[in-house]
Length: 540
Image 1 (cartoon, rainbow, N blue to C red):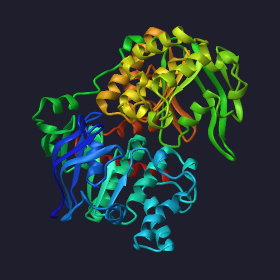
Image 2 (tube, rainbow, N blue to C red; image 1 turned 135 degrees about the vertical axis):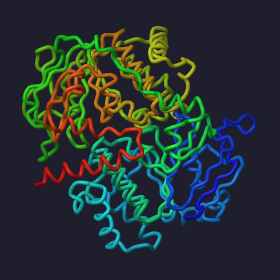
Image 3 (cartoon, rainbow, N blue to C red; image 1 turned 180 degrees about the vertical axis):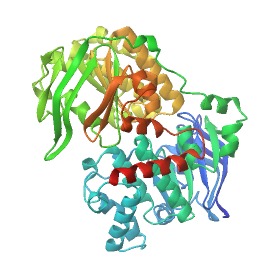
Image 4 (cartoon, rainbow, N blue to C red; image 1 turned 90 degrees about the horizontal axis):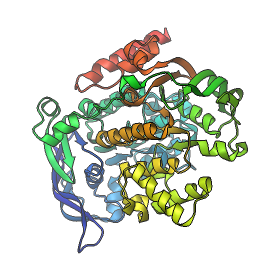
């Protein structure tokens, strides 16, 4: 053991120096070798800024306004970029929340893995490739000998996140900053990834700062937890002490979130809006969806769940017209739905919209919110001038955003605010059906609950039909009327929400439900052993 990182009175600011926006307000953190510190708090609390500051790094437009960051007796603040580069990747590594936005799309995964070991003189190219394959296997990636030779777009989001975690471990650093590393993972995959991270930390005596909004996850990973709010430390304690006896009202409020649940009386039968018959689809020679039969009731929320690579997003692409099925058909009110987006008529294009997982990558950073919303309003409804301005303001009110935000760009909004803009953009077409692709996975629990309540209200007021793709079963239980369970591109089970959660019929569905992390520091050890036993049985 022994102290590795010390942060004292650290202050971060942005904007005009005469009237700055204060991001961190004098925080103090300590981290020993081999220790894992969890940072939790709602969106805008300063968690990610604190994690980056532990590397001696601040985002563009953000500056250190005071304090000290000492790593292994070296003061990081004031080091040159060249001096920091010698540390970054070798002794301090970072795992970003969005792997899709962080990988170079023009380079194969194994090429990107090998860069840091070669540049820092840790390993040759051949040694790095061999090590990559070993870590890919440890991270439970499929075909570990082959997957590194794919490009980022050729693997699923969950697989990409695991590849990034392996890449951060390439030089066996002393400190790893994990910024929401399991956000994109399904519950069964999450068990193995969390276990692999914990094994690496234990095996190499690596210290870690684990940033997350998932309190159940942080309780599995952290030795101590620091709760943050508005750039300040609320309280810090050992994990067990924090779970059993939080001292501050704000901490207790975090522990109590996600109590929202759609009332059971709303789960009444409804006419079918969309019907899939024998739908088979894939990419090139690889078939992803196999002969799917399903229904999506009008005015209701149908959730699609399953492990990474099960075909959830592929089904969304088929419905949106982005991927024509190889066989079968989709019916819209019992009439065939044109499979190709470019051949769909204007009415169909208007009726089917999407809300994307990452508002950071789906909103144009150069456009103001007004420009982002005005374009679809004009395209789909023909409004211009005064009517256009009125409709755009109305959309902002629908998603509970201040119209004053209209002249801001996405970078000036919080994660939750950006996601609300994404919802408003989908509503701009005045659709009947919206595909929600992991729309709360990147949000903290307080903000996510607000988004779920907003979607339920919009559905009630506007009569919308949702297809809700997610790996978060707590979200499914909160918002869904119906659940479709996918595994390896096949439907395992589909039924009303209460039937799936109350009396699942299939072993795989039961396995998913048992894999939801619990607020118990011992849960991961038991769940991991149970998952391994299931895999052994499947292999035998």
